Length: 164
Image (cartoon, rainbow, N blue to C red):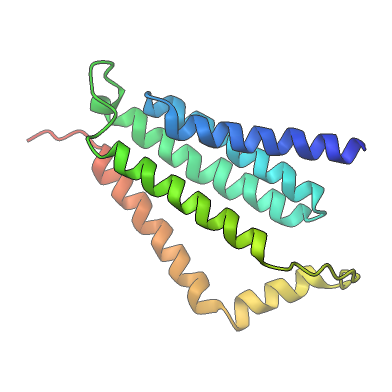
């Protein structure tokens, strides 16, 4: 009973903050709500008994990515201007596409049979994860690192003040 209440709390926190991200007019406030949504997802990982993934969620997404986004927003003075328009002309089209996607996903989930299998978690699951990342999936792991580096460089280039 308590676990269900905590699950509902984290779910409401994640979904509510995610809705605030996309509906808020101020981009800085949207980025702060993104942090709250990612923390809610980390809480759900804890409830799923996946503490490693929860810690990675907090360290990488809440710690690194959100900080990078916040710094890029704050360093770009034009976006922080209160008179700057934060929406574009195509918001209605994106809302229709989002609602359509939501309907398709709800119908898909409702028609699929999800079998539940109770198995024990292997003892050395973290060791196996590390070995898989460094042996079988080393190329995607490195591509992800290069992508994050490119995002960091791009954020710096966008955020730096043009002196010319």
